[in-house]
Structure formats: C-alpha cells, structure tokens
Image (cartoon, rainbow, N blue to C red; front, top):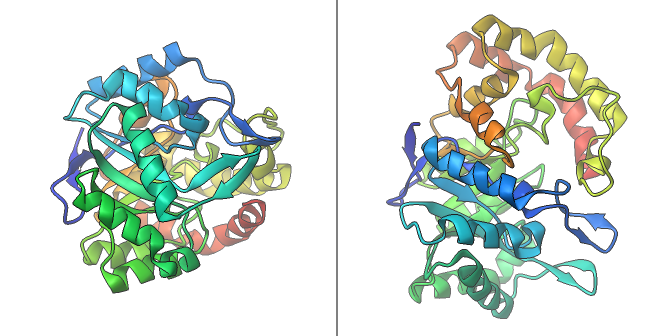
Length: 329
C-alpha cells in the first residue's frame, strides 16, 4: 500500500481508503432507501480487519450511513486504534421518517458528540459537512460550528463532502475564504466533471478524497442492462435500465479492452485511472466484504500516459450518461 499526504495537513493516508457506507446496512427513511441493502456485521467486521491487513488506514463514514450503524461498527472494531484515520460527516437527519438537511451550529455540535461516542474517539480526525450547498455555506453558521469544534479539540480537520454533479460553486467558496482542509468529490472514469476543481483545490493545499470511484459498481463489470436491484438498495432508482444500457456499451467497446490489455481487473483499472492524478489524496471504493478489499487493493499500478489520455478524452462521450444520472440524483 502506498500513502499520500492529505493536503497541507499532517495526515498521511492510504491511497486506497475504505468507503463505509455499505456496512451501515439497508436502512430506510420512510420509504426511501439510504443504504446498499442488508449487511452482515460479521462479514463487515472481517472486511474491516482485512483492510487493515492490506495497509488501509483511512476509513470514510457518515452519521447517516445506516443511521449511525456504520460509525458504531467502526467504533467497535478500530475506534481505539489511533493509527487509523477516520473521517465522518454531518448534516443529514431523520425527522419523522423524512430526510432533513440540518447545518445549524446547534445540531452540528450535538451530532459531533454522538459521532465521537459511536466511534469511541475523543477527537475526530476529519469532519465533513455532508452535501452542504452554497447558501448554507454562505450563511456561515455551519462554518462557525466546524471552527468552534476545531478550537475545542473535538475535531482535527474539517472539510466538505459533495455529491452534486457541479461542485464548483461550493468548492470555490471555501477556497476563496480559505475555509476547511479538504474536499470529497465525485470523480471516476465515467464522471470527470470535477477534475478542474480538484486541480485547483489541490494547488491551494486542500486534501482531495475521490468518492464514487466505481460509479455505484458500474465500473466493476458486474452489471448488465438487465440488472435490477433490491428495493432497499438506493441503486434501484439511480441506475435505470437506460443508464445501464448506455454505460455498458461504452465500457465494453472502449474502456474494458484497456483493462484486458494490461491484464488488470476492471475494478483495478478504474481505480488506477483515478490514482494517476497526483492531486488526489485517496480514493474510497465502497467495501462490505473481505473479497472486495482484495479486489480494490490488488493490481494497483501506474497507468500509462497513453491510457490516461484516452480515458480522459472519453469525458465528452460520457456526458450523455452523466446527464441521465444527474436526473436521478
């Protein structure tokens, strides 16, 4: 495992991290699935320890993943291991079985205490505003909360995690004001919209976490146009048959032949593309099994400049698929 510096902080984190959304299980808020289907805690625990054996020292979660269960499971397994960097998030709530976004100072402070307790930590390594948008950042209350928590020693560093398809406005605002220490942005072979923002932020000393590196599993090669997901899996409404059909066509014709040429799995090839950008501190594929740990950590190697340039050139062709994804949220 190789390690990279997280922006201008003193954190050195594994270039492959552990995305801990899936181990939260198949939670719902009302009728809306907010997880990846059921998860077995014994299987998840084995995956966590397998990740440690593979050299992974960065785990990314959120208080909303499994409505706190992901954090609690990490706390039970690695919470007291101070050599492990745990990042979590705040801002999503379940109120009367409805998803509510809350970036008030009062709630952030309250939620931080609960996350600390679940994670069995005295201080959070990296605390992220979960999908806060520009208006919420400009109000200043959430930023005041994060700075106050930092001064109190409750958190070491903080930043912003975005799932928006256009992250520039929020990222630019933080950079202009020199707020925070890092950004978590969607970036992968299919959705490359954030690259300019990533390059700009890294140049200013922000750590960069690449999220959704396998685009909900599309880049693993496990799905086809006929794939259907369980109702408690959020992909049931995000990966429509049309999206699956259009994406699979491009992958089969132009992307996966490159992986085959290099003798790499589709997963490794997708991760290698992201890691070919030095600006990125870590990439966090979602993990729920020990087998996925192995799949995500084996075959990591330097991508050829020719393959990198070709995959980058496909961004325009992918745009029609990304627009369909944008409509699904």
